[in-house]
Length: 90
Image (cartoon, rainbow, N blue to C red; front, top):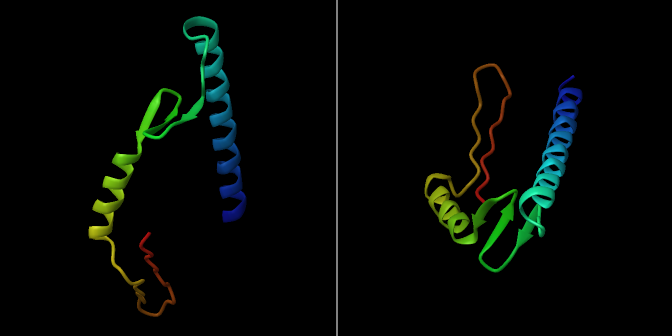
């Protein structure tokens, strides 16, 4: 049951992303910008639908996150259950 639900959500996410990308491209190319790009990449940033993700910001986020994540995977057992939690540092 969980796999079917996950597959449905994944398909819906893919369809939504494709629809938004097509709508963005059509709006930009017909109305505002002749060189509309859904995704572009250069040495400084990645641009997706007018959102800019700078490599420097990603590096800062990863270095900050590593301070709070454990270096070794940890295991936690609950009473009368066999639930295991693994944490893996990037």
